[in-house]
Length: 195
Image (cartoon, rainbow, N blue to C red; front, side, top):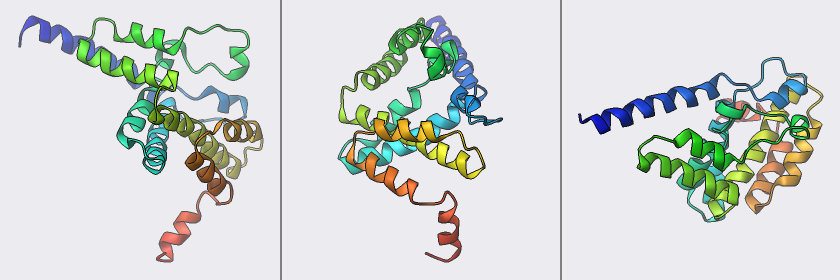
């Protein structure tokens, strides 16, 4: 292993540890809604990536690219945290692309470019896949709000309404209608009944 490769691996190890924080950092909006132990940012990003792949496939896009962008869409929160919307009224956070550029500083150009390009594409809504990934972010929030509401948290309607109004793809809107008319555990009954 050459010194250059060793340096690259050291930087990448730091990135892996940094992005691991997303497993511990909670989505703060749910704390405002009264959820005591809300999902982590990584929890949100995982399901958003799954949803992005589904939406992109049904919209005629590349599901892998949409899922990939969703995977990195909130990684900046290791540095700026998950600022709730009420906080954003008073705070001026840097652009996600700028945070990502700082996170990628000193990393191998192949990796830095890969992540920076994905974040830039997502933020600029520069492709069908980016639009699908953005819809997935909102749809995941909607699904999570419905799950929390079924668990007894009644202060989630604002998240449901704002998520619904932000959806732009036909598939995202159709999926939203379906999740709104389906109980969060109806799928279990279907499986147990052999459907």
